[in-house]
Length: 67
View (cartoon, helix red, strand yellow):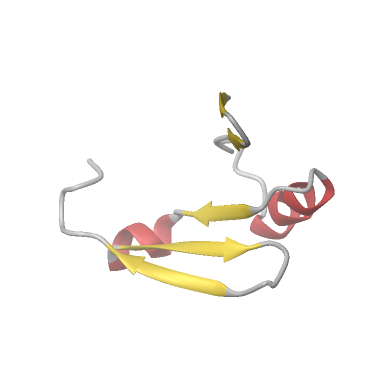
């Protein structure tokens, strides 16, 4: 975990179901969640979820930029 002023960054690698991870993020009052799973990697995007509004934004990334 890394803290930066008002931000906390955590990485979930346990293989939990996404719903369980989102419930935990909600319980811990996280502002945003970035989702990067198999589907996202295959299609070269990641998902940013705003936990308050439940809005989702998809962001494309160039091939090889995360590896």
